[in-house]
Image 1 (cartoon, rainbow, N blue to C red):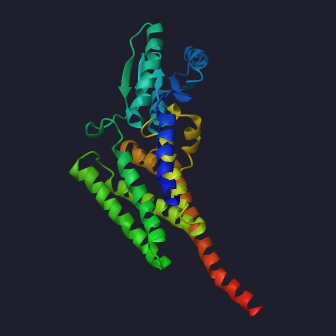
Image 2 (image 1 turned 90 degrees about the horizontal axis):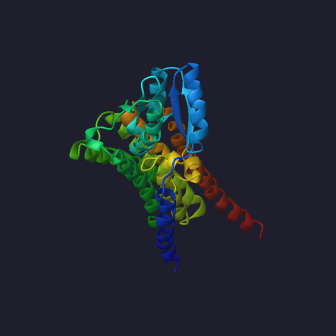
Image 3 (image 1 turned 180 degrees about the horizontal axis):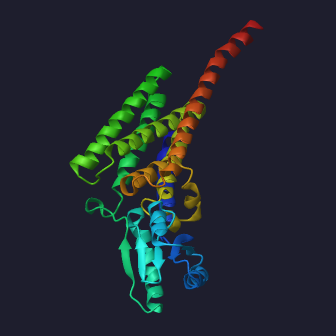
Length: 318
């Protein structure tokens, strides 16, 4: 009966979390900007901030160059220039977010007596028009580390820690080579930044592997459920790849900045489409989870070292 817990958990958690996250995406607090330092732009932004709340968070920006930088860093989902009726977007950040912003600003342009002109400053490549190919590359990396650590700690007995870490490192290398070969060469879905993507894939595998290994060593096979929950059930909706974080329930929006899957996938997107802009927010999270996994493994070694000593001391006192 215990063996049925995991499949039952998956049957409930996967549709429960994913349908909750994705079935009715609506914008909430999505950041957009009005370009212009004059009084009219500030007045327009103030009026739109009231009218478009809570779906959009409207602010002003002095010029187009600054607005472009904010789009590249994904600090903004759109920037509207009332002087020209131009809406600047970055569809590589999320086609759904781009479409949502476009729909919201079309009536604003008409009220100003002009037709909305859209300029995509970071478009998606023709080889990946939906922008989700990286999801499968990153998820493969995460699952490679998770499954490797689970098998080595649950199904294989008597393996030394040094051997386990060596195997995990080898799997990370193989995962990086295989996934990038399939994505870049076999299908041509991705292009550019090959080395950076391979390093992120390898780091994702190591991150998930150390986290799972440390967890299993501390709490046992039950870590399998915890690992799937953190890495897949919560990690995918919180990543913002399928649906932008401003259009999923607030639970996932808050988790976006803390979960390893979110950090790996967001890092891949920023590397592939934005030249690494804003990736400094993702790398510390990946490093944090690697450190947490390594710390859990270290704690487990302390426990295993102290256990025989405690037994020996107890036997000596008899």
